[in-house]
Length: 435
Image (cartoon, rainbow, N blue to C red; front, side):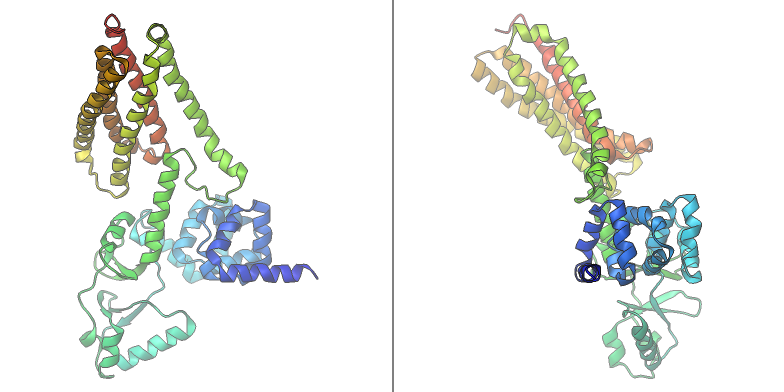
């Protein structure tokens, strides 16, 4: 008797705040999440289902009760179902496909022929297209029929008898036109579309200057294949960007705010071990120069200054290059020029910051040679930081690795090691002049 009111409360929560409900569902242990979905799957809305991450869907769907699984699969858009299908184990794929109706199964097969992250892979095949030879009266009747069965479409596209995209209807133009006028006479012919093989970032860039709810996807012969909604596109780009940010600092790209503690530890701890190993590498460089540090103890004061400035300068370069890679702004033939540009910026920054640091050290310690050593160490480290911040992600991408995965850890190691090496190396070189 107590369980029914509780389930009703949960159902109401999922209906009223689907996004928060999806986030909380992902924060549950797998057994708890399965229990919730098995209990209320039939009450879920397509709007709520789309907020559940693909990783969570891939993990939970095969373990759901068959009837519950079918209920959820029926709510999935074809492009989402295709992404989930690719993530399933071979044994679970047939079981997943068996839950799909023939039309959705065919749509998925077509979607999977396009490259990953292309407009064709992410497009929705549920759109409204009317023949150009229809009259306004016939078009309005068809729109009414469709609206009674599903949500009204954002745009009504116009195609010819071979499904070529020839225009888009403006509702105001349609309503003000004679009912016997053909759509070809009132449609807007200057229409923006994207090719099915265009990559997601390029589509997002094209849409960033336009205020469309959706964009039509066409093939090489301008046949209308589907649509990509701006909301879905920008959400995908945003999710990819946030994953890159998390990876950049050694966290898992698929980790969420309410992910289970065990899951979060599994994503973060290995990279902390890597960071610990690189910290010992930097410490070994300092240990190598322990005699000069013991002799001139003031050198220890400037070690964190050198390392900190190098890390910050490298992070600036890394951030700019990472954005360029994500936005596809760095063609391969310009990668070398970009690396040299960042190295040059590092050199100029190193000279400017090194000069100020040298003067500060000279004034503080009353030793011009100490200022010279600190300034030269800063110059070398910031030059290397600029070069490394640009080179690391470009090299990782070139060899097929994810540049966001551990670039920051590698960069920090290089700036610490080279900063200590250059600074203490110059100290050894000028030790006879240091006080």
